[in-house]
Image (cartoon, rainbow, N blue to C red; front, side, top):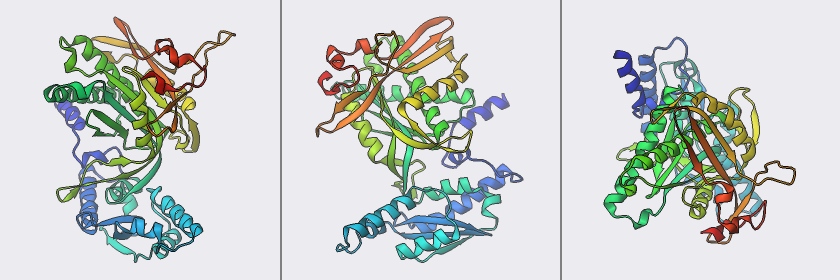
Length: 419
């Protein structure tokens, strides 16, 4: 019973518990580790000054940190210069700023001093009663510092769920459907925890659905998010089967994409929120994709980016096809998982295509046109969950289920004609 209570407590996260996914330094007990987290956070909170300032860069020293702290308007003021900068100088400043915001890691002394000079910011020293590396760990410090800055992220996966026909419901039906979707998110997360897949996810509402992402970065973190999406959709499908009133459980369409965005923490009361917000290209792409997705459909955006491979430690270039292919093997960890009283025997995820003259299956790439006429490349995804003592759960649409307009061109189709 004590172990069960401990497990349940582990599943309920406070803002402090959100940092527990990071490596704990050897020789530092959890209680002391938490004290170190709270101490550093309190100091950075004072520098933040209720959101007026941002932390632009940092580096460790023997017993503390050096940080660059300045008002948030510096972001646009630096990029734009004095308004009479030549185009080349504006481009140089923008690239420097993007490079600075895209790293969450500490700078070395030469880099730190060069950035301080370029921004015209005088460094400040944060004194700590412990060594940063041995008292907290640099990876964790980076996560704490991130709460008080803005970061440009190029390689994070994001899911967007949308409830079909949501605007046609009464307010009471809308809140019931959002609660149902939230329950599916929580149930999927709990199932991953049972398999020791401790995904540190965040979400924000769109009004009729959710954006969901993994706070952790890298190939493994993005694959874990793909697993979370599959289990959310499965729980939602089972809930729809069990529901006597179909309007209490939303029918979903889902989009998955990897791309760039800015990550920031809004002020909530007198503190930065415990969860981040995203704004940028990946959320724009997802909004365009979901606008054209069909009820029950799963779309994967076309991407090609560099991700950190947690196994090798190398930076590897991954595109949409590579990603889905790599996501198959980790799904075996979910075999035996209980879904509605039946154990999962196999989960198959794939991008759909058409059979060629040799009998081989290809992968179809579609083009959707947004309201501005801009093209967005996507793939149609399927997920089949086979259970030992239960009916299979089929998620997404088969290519042959798409309206006839989708088959005008084998490899490329204007999805906007389908809706």
